[in-house]
Length: 392
Image 1: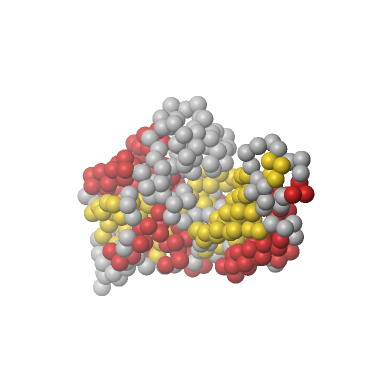
Image 2: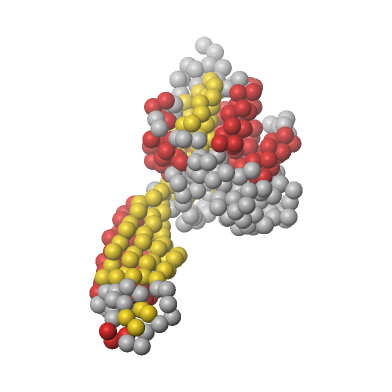
């Protein structure tokens, strides 16, 4: 089956572009969820809505169920709070909201695969289609799990994919283990003593202490983390003060911590507290720290990664499957699924001459030529993982 010869590719492209024109933020994907549910219903697929608030689940039984096995295929549906600056007809019609990460395309690919799987049912067992809300920072995967996803649909493994700028269209990147980082958020209130700008000796300079903390935090990945491990500590926001000539009482630093290993993640969290407290104390200030653990690292199961590589090679060609690319320090809440069951998360190339922008860029667009690749990958994966049992 050629990945560009599926029936309905033009219709799926139109569907993808319609979703792109009408993006919805985390847990607001009601229109998108409605489109997904209606499409699955039209194929005769069993549909469950409002799983994890706005998630949709479809259940497709195979021709046989001798193995009684079940697998979960996941696509995310939400958009980002950002402008859309692309000069294209399907540009977002919602001011300040855009599908800047390609979740519209992920949804279209899995819907296309659903049509093929429902038509042939050429597998043994059950396929659970998971259309997940709120991947972008809100933990929609965890919301679905907390809503009883595994109790209601007890899959043995989870499978996900993401379009990937920086990888050419027609290639796939599949990591044997870690592929995406864990991410945590922190806010550090640096507590000083306000004073007149012309009388600094009467205050405790929270701005100066905050600046020292920003610099000192970089010693954690540079000097506390093993050189062959990965960690990022980044301050993204600084806020304090309201006047040119008054030293503020409080300056707040906000940022994120990223790591692939849980041991490194724990080390960085511990050292962040120590470094911030001591850097502030050296200048007479104190700190108040709020630390929020967010997404775990996304770590592939090696055996599943081998299967995914075999399937991707059958779709794209063996020379188009990359196994040795470095993992990303970006995060992905598919990790909540792969923490509960073995999982595999694949990057599929998005780049061609017309698609060169990175994820979360205001001119990014999902490459519609990727839809056929994703559909073929999903359908062949099901055949490989849930093969029809031979007649006895």
